[in-house]
Amino acid sequence: MTSRIALKEWEIVVDAVERGSHLLLLRKGGLADPGEGFTLKHREFFLYPTREHQRPEQVRPEFQERLRTLAQAASQPQGEIPLEVYAGVAFQKEIRDPAALSALERFHIWSAEFLQERARYRPELPTQLLVIRAYRLPHPVALPVQPEYAGCRSWVTLAQEIPLEGAQPIVENRRFRAALEEISSRL
Image 1 (cartoon, helix red, strand yellow):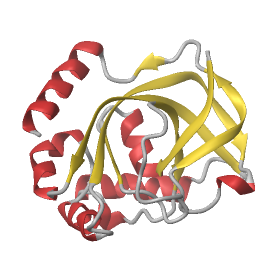
Image 2 (cartoon, one colour; image 1 turned 90 degrees about the horizontal axis):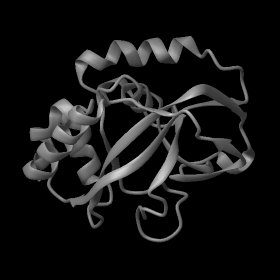
Image 3 (cartoon, helix red, strand yellow; image 1 turned 60 degrees about the vertical axis):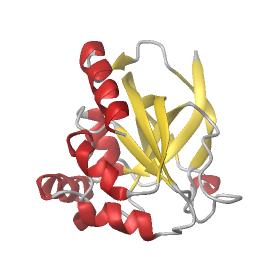
């Protein structure tokens, strides 16, 4: 099995997903996305790490040092994007009140200020909450960045198919099922 679909997400969020400390994605849509707001076009995708728009104050204090470390590391050569995580959407819900997310803090890394900021951005659009089941590829793939990947857009169609064989769940099955049940019951 292969895929060439990727969803752009902050590098710090992708890192937290890889560490098993982040199960949620929040989407409203990028400025370059067509139409009105975010559309869940694909239920499975690679997480395409980007540094666009991420700032230390948007994550809780305990994750700010990690964000700075990632920014300084820049381990990938210029012009390459590392793909290490494949994800599937396990649960989706529209959120209009960011206070609903405060009860889910242990499943994400965002600051309360960022959640308020996200709600104020294009307030006519609901925020899409996605609970993702993430898988680590057995071997990270570094792809050349293409001009069509640039910009503030959600979805990217990669220039090549990437194999998924051997990808392993990041969060153990029982722990993920318990988290999914808790998240859905709190919303």
